[in-house]
Image 1 (cartoon, rainbow, N blue to C red):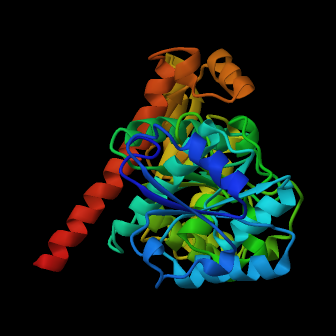
Image 2: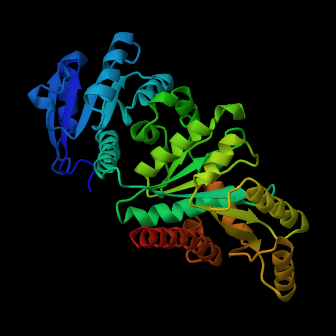
Image 3: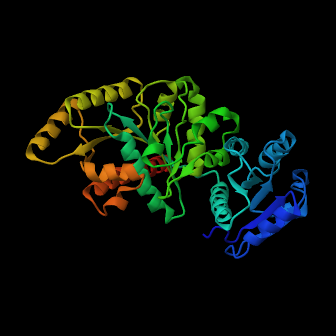
Length: 399
């Protein structure tokens, strides 16, 4: 779908000049129908004819005016809760934009408005409207990446797997999100070369407003199509991640995204337990070393002691190098852990390092590499397992 294709967009601008400027940029927008209204935000009411059939609402707002912010809150959350709202304003600061996002505005377009910015905002708004109208039955799959020790590369695998899935699902008009749940030391944004000025901090500041629009508004989109909910720049106390907040976040994410990948922190607390409990599958990442195997065995025992036996767990051996000696060590590792290793991701330090340095998918660095094949097999196998489990559950409930 083009950025504005088949959309009925209504804009409320504060002056004739800004209205005319928007109108100029709205020409040739893939068949979108634009209507502009010049006036104050208080004119926006659902019973007025111009606002009865809109798909996207663009509002010219002064973020520094408390009375306008109050009116905007009513428009977004009371009058038009199912309509994507795009904000626009001149000379807005990062703090201004974050304030609008917390209110539920899906995107922001700076003034003077350019066609490129407008197209990007409408594309996002269209995808969010589609997600909203898809119905309450949509429930995305949740896969958590759990670290079997430090430095095993779980974040790297989560980021790269997310890039592959996002590119594949984009062909079906579906989206994938990576949630960096390590709010103290998360580095997923760094690995994807994405800005983390918005992310968890914005959600935690307004947990009562957590919904699909707010979540979409505080994610950052990678060139692959992957949406990232970044960890905050500043260190936050782990107590902020309450079980209630984590459960609500995952539930909202399931309604918006086809697949949600969670990069877990290397700690156990109630919030992290909730994330694992809410997962459809856990990918436990380790390396072929004595410390790695011991720590992975400890994680497996902890999952058992915490009563998480109903969640599927698959073991991922990262940076694996084939060879007779390695094959022997692999069997010994499986014996020590008391279970088989499900996925072996080959070692390709050069390709992975270059991808991380550039913040891109490894397929951009080296097409059809063994490393890409290994990560694809890992994540596609995880998704297939979830789908098979869901089919089995449906068969049992129908029997």
